[in-house]
Image (cartoon, rainbow, N blue to C red):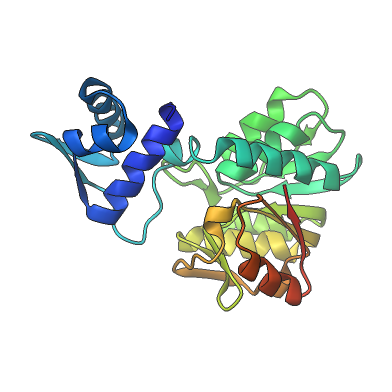
Length: 252
C-alpha cells in the first residue's frame, strides 16, 4: 500500500468510525506505527483530524467532503484517465468552462495544451490551464471559497451567464439516477447550474466513488448530462440507469 492509498485508508476509517488508533491502522495498512504517526500528523495539519494519545479523532463533520488536499491524492490514476478521455471530447477552437474540484483540475491540465478558450471556475483549474501554452484563459469573478479555492457568489454566476460555451466540464460530489447531480456546498450548486445554463453540452467527469452517492445540494437531473466520463469501477447497475436517462457513458 503506497502513500496515497494509505492516506485514503486512514480517511475512510476515520469517516466510518470517527476515531482511529495507531496500532489498528498499522495492522490495516501493513506499515510501521512510526509511518502511521507521520501520516496522522500530516492529516492533523490539514485539519482532517485531531491527534489524541495513541491515535486520532475525526474533525470531518458528517455529510461534508474531505478537504481538497486530501481528495487530490485519492483515485489519482482514475482521475488522470478520465481527464485524458474528456480531452478527446473537446475540439480545438471550442469555448469550455472547467468546473472546480480535483477531477476538473486534472482535466484542466490536459486542456491547457489545447487551442481552446477556457473559463476555469477555481484557482486550481486556472493554474493547471496556465501551465500549458495553448489555451486562452478567461477568469470568472466571484468570492474564493476557502480551502477549495473555487469561485462562488453572484459575480461568478453573472460571469457564466454572460458567456455561451460549447462545453462545460462539470464535477460533482454525488450522482444517482433518482437524485441526479448533487454537491456539498450550496454556493457551488448555484455556480454549477449557471455553467450548465451557459453550455450547449454538459460533460460530467466523476470517478466511480461519486456514483450512487447523494449529497445535500441538488444541481440537476441525470438527464441534463450529455456525456458521463467515469472509471471502470463504476457499478453496472448505476451505469445502466444513467444510460437509460439518455446519457452517453464512457468508462475508462
